Amino acid sequence: MDPAFIFLQFLSGLASASNLFLIACGLTIIFGVTRIVNFAHGSFYMLGAYLAYTLTAQIMPILGDVLGFWLAIPLAAVAVGLLAVVMELLLLRRIYRSHELFQLLATFGVVLIVQDLVQTVWGPEELFGPRAPGFTSFVVIFGFRFPEYQLVLIAAGPLVLGAIWLLFNRTRWGNLVRAATQDREMVGALGVNQARLFTGVLFLGGFLAGLAGALQLPVEPANPFMDVNIIAEAFVVTVIGGMGNVLGAFLAALIIAQLQAFGILVFPEITLVLPFLVMALVLVVRPWGLLGKPETTTSHGFAGDRPLRPLGRTQQLLIAGTVAVLLLLPLILGEYGQKLALEVFVYALLAFSLNFIMGAGGMVSFGHAAYFGLGGYGAALLVHHLGFGMEVAMLAAPLFAGLGALLFGWFVVRLSGVYFAMLTLAFAQIVWSTAFQWVEVTGGDNGMIGIWPSGWASDRTVYYYLSLLVCGAAIAFLWRASHAPFGYTLRAGRDSTLRADAIGIDLKRHQWLAFALAGTCAGVAGSVFVFSKGNIDPGSLAIPTSVDALVMVLLGGIQTLTGPLVGGAVFHLLEAQILPLTDYWRALLGATILVLVIVFPMGIAGFLRDKLLPDDDPGDAIEKETGKDGRVEART
Image (tube, rainbow, N blue to C red; front, side, top):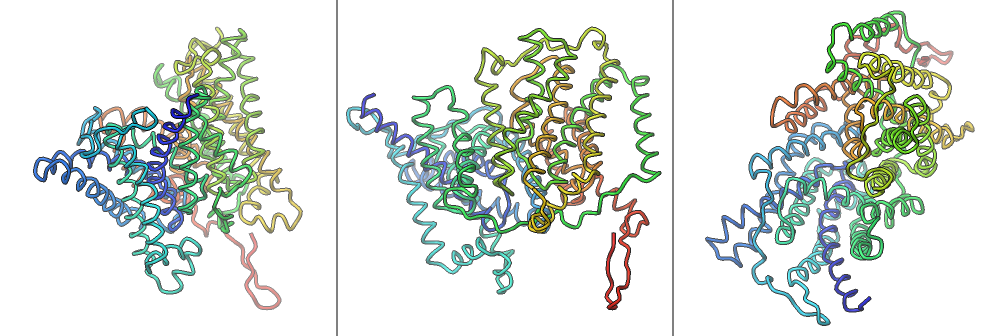
């Protein structure tokens, strides 16, 4: 390979690294201080590009091309920073004391609203911005032409890194931010106004994301998919560098950008998954990132849950009534209604399996769709390539998912918190990329079609009852496991890892087994799903499916066993019935999520439980006794 070409490829990698660093820098600063995993950061990046497009069109005719363009770029970044402040004041400030998952869910709602807002204001078409005045030509390097503007991007990263270093090391505000990154509670105890500090951090993070989007406009047209395309890479860079570490983000951006620049030449077939492979490798070797530090927070925010109790007579009658209604539904529902109902069973099981590791185990997975898709693809491969019938495929499919969960779970249970979630995301992306690029086996982007039930189950009503039986059995199994000593052990480890270790519990082994059980049951849902649709494609393994599962759990209520079932049903019915009635379904769904997060922070089922079964309910009350020393003791 020509050394000159290699050098130019290296320069292209540096330009990409600068852009990645700018967006990841804001993300890591926000997380370091507020502990919020900001899903809306990709939206800030996209808004930066769109606002730069509008501002350049308005300002350049008035002030001239050079002054107008280079003034529009920082103005767009400032505007995005102010929008981030608005989000902090109106939304995040109300939920800082909520569990971090609700903050993540709230920012996901903002993503949906911004997507519709962008398409309403600027339209769905790609918008090409002007070329950067003064840097429209090229330079010749070793006989090859290299765009001048790429040199500007290369310089932008180190300049911003230097400015951030000066801000954090030479100003009082920067010192407070660094202190808050290390110990937020201590900063509050010293009398620092944390609300004002958080507002400033959100402005800085939004400004950097907006600056990255604005600087990208001469290279890439503004389009409504910029947020989704960039946020996964931004998370990868942030996690590899170490959450909250700016220098680590810079180093990780260099590594990822250079791997992408040369990977497309050497390993073109794995370019989609290469960043996630690197992230998985780094987290396995160094669980807190290259320059990060081990997390000191051990609480998962679930402590204080009501203890699990066997079902009372009223609850048993309620469940029996629900099952009876489900058995009778085909008498009143048509074909479409039955199809919708069995899809609810599938998503309810997917959400319930995710909640088994989140609620009981405190393990938040961002990649649960991997096991749902592995089950679906396992069934489809057996039917499509080996000619097995539905019966064999549905029995074998959970094994595919279970084996995948066993393999990946062995690595991920060694991590915790955000790093655990990110490693699950990495493994899910590896599975997705395999299905997407292994065309001769999986059908690639087109997937596999013609995966229908056997003749006896081809009738919609029969398949409805089969789905109810299979999904109901899997849910009952996980429900029983939650009430077994195994489930109580998981909860003990979730609430206090140190105490669990102190009494001799092999917590990692319990978590590993729970992860495998949850993955297996997600595979059951995937196998039922594929025969209901008749096809499967990589979308079942993709990030949006994992996010949907998270939303279902949180909407229903993570601290209740029935919550995921309620959340799965409500979310899917919203998507299938109400949202198609409007072109602004994303905004409507996002607004619904925000309302639920703010008004019902315990989720729908949690809210109903608190109203119908208050703490003084005889079944849940904590018995109080007076000890011999006169102190009041609690006994559950």
